[in-house]
Length: 234
Image 1 (cartoon, helix red, strand yellow):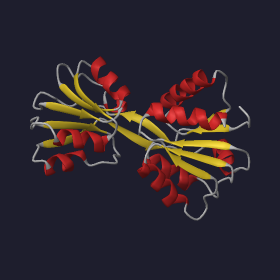
Image 2 (cartoon, rainbow, N blue to C red; image 1 turned 120 degrees about the horizontal axis):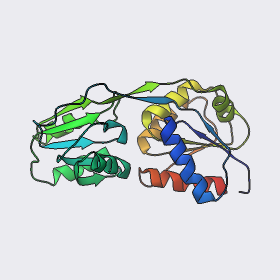
Image 3 (cartoon, rainbow, N blue to C red; image 1 turned 60 degrees about the horizontal axis):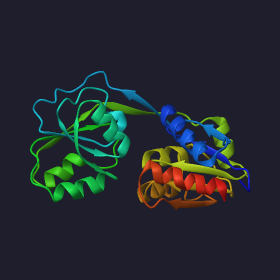
């Protein structure tokens, strides 16, 4: 790496550790990283009775912590699809994001009654989108994303003058990180998973942001890791 950079990861603990492992494997060396989860995943205590539903939708791996035995599942993300399969579900489609999933459903025959397994905060109102397609759908919260304080170390890196990289994996985490800091460092490079995440970051830091921000071509973990590695190696 030509210029030493610090990577700040604000995903939940396990997810940040997985991302860091993928980055270090791609780089072939240890990466100077600060892990400061801005969200904590708290599984729900109840698992819904899925028998009344024809199809399950899951847009996050965190939504699946109970059996999906034999149920057709529409997923967002490869890791979510893997979790659904492990839980006994029959994955029928895996989309890049919620918008792409709704677009695909629009091209298919009516799938019947759908239940959406969701967190306490979502970027897309999937039941409302299904209703517009005359598809019966409801949602069940299977986990919540509890806000966590940004660590002092992470704040100092984001606000400091040394080169730093800040990946943002969701609009909510972008808002929370932006809210937790003052003026960003002039050599901070933000990598956003989507236009919505970038807009949330800019909206929260409009008067204080310096540095740069880019959006990956596809809203996937793989694309994020690729861009982080490229930024580290620049």
